[in-house]
Length: 139
Image (tube, rainbow, N blue to C red; front, side):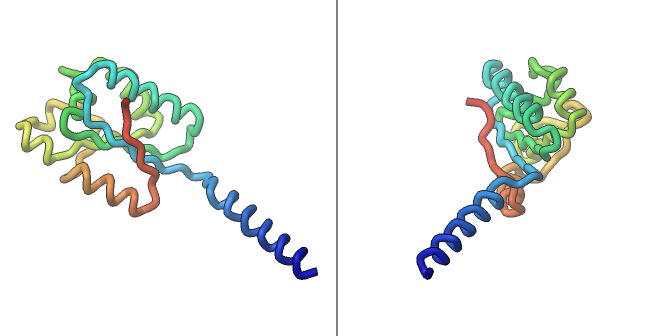
């Protein structure tokens, strides 16, 4: 009888872990740092499209810094239309102000829909501390 109880308890613990491991509210934070390569831009935009198609209600934030800021700059991005559609779908693009200072880039050089954070890496860490899943975008 003890073995049956032990097995039943073990089964219930494993089953509850499976249920807990599959949240309904997906919160994903992407890091993107290399938009100079247009193939990186294309691959990353496709990744975002795939995730939003699979989980249309997911909360998605994209933190761009270093060369990644070029993804949301009209003068340098090859995928602005797709990015604007992703923003309409609820994807947030957040630009690192440290990168802006280091590269002497003003807010006027970005699409108006972006948001800003003082430090991109800090934003990534804080969102992960809040339970967001981290993904490095691109390849």
